[in-house]
Length: 573
Image (cartoon, rainbow, N blue to C red; front, side, top):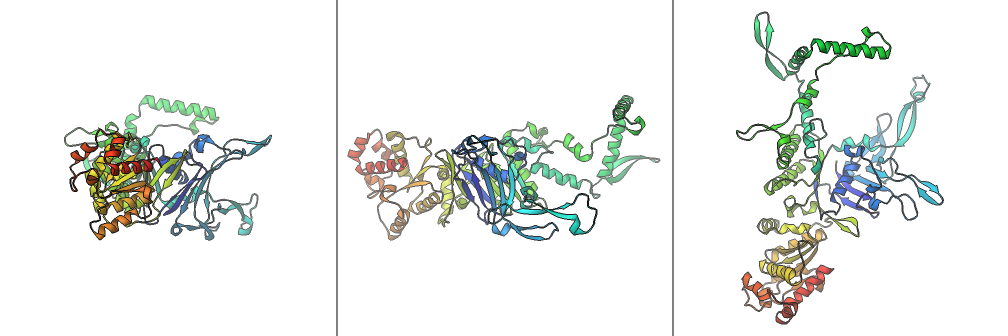
């Protein structure tokens, strides 16, 4: 099933105005990006909450889960913490009535809500949090009410109209969430727990497939069996072999003392229950094959001629690799239903090559119908080609907000953008608060120096990226990526109109910008610095501005001073 939007109100870093994440029916993976403490994990948790993730069924909710710890407004009235997950129109379905027939009520999504009890005392509302409500709602947003079949007390008449009465109650989300597919929430803290065979994870689900298959009569084994003619090899099913050997293990463990312990336990319990001891017994037995597997078997790894090591003895990076292998293995199993994966920072503990491999694996699995939602700080989990799948999360006035593409831009040179990233790391602009776009390396080097040494601005601390776009033609694509994610950008371009094509490209880049939002050299940077056009020797360019004060720059290179002034205005906006 596909989602249309996720709406969050008053949940942790999300304020009363709320945050809405929109989903496209054709996209199966979304990456949340943003600075630390922007609220990415809170958005993923909100999705897990409304999807009924098991962790939140036993979660102790408190006022700390409300925005700014406020459960009452200025008038003392309770504030609602509410999360809504809307299904795409193509994924909505009709409920069944009490007779199992199709109902006219359509389920459009699921809501999760908490508020405080209302109790008026001296014109003020006080109280504590109610038990969360988790209901299904209709296309108009109202909670669905269903009729449940109940047998009337004391009525033995078999006629349907006398046996059944209708008891209306809200449609509980838990009764319908199974239709969305399997849900897996993976975070950093659960990395070691992931490999628990009794847990709730892709690893445990792989083993469930094995446990279902174990009793299959096609699973056979040859074992030595003692007969009248001596010891012979006999083929039998694995299940029968297990039962035979577990019986032998039980006999081996059964000593005289164990028998006495069982007898005494039985006699004492019978005495407490007030029944004859001959009518009650207690005895030890061997675990069944599922329980025995969970208790005794452990996943080991072996590389080359090294000794086998249990996974618990491997490092976190190795476990991250194994986790990816488990996910791929599970989803490759036959007839496995579509699944939803919520992953907090999947890049943790992976080196760059495996980060890129993991990202491509996610895209491949998403194309097969599985849905992925993850937060990331890694440029290797982003692609210019997939910028439509990016949700940028930021904080403004203490509250989480989001930006995501609302208009699709056709990037002309996607391959060039990716190649520029591999060459120069320009993909960091996805994480920047402000971006200065330059045509080439010379502008980037000089502007970097002017910011750090002349203006004393730390670009890293302030999340400012200065990007060498590799030519005027690429700059337009970088601009469109910035616009789609509401990242502030400032183009620095040359003014030498050598061709009508270049003039058209410049016009496209500057479209919608006022004079303060870009800088155009009268000719080009080297000419602005008093050099001959084409002299782009970086050491020489830097030598001209190094060690100079603002006043000296203004006097010697007025065009460069104009550039500095406009950049300062852009960064302060």
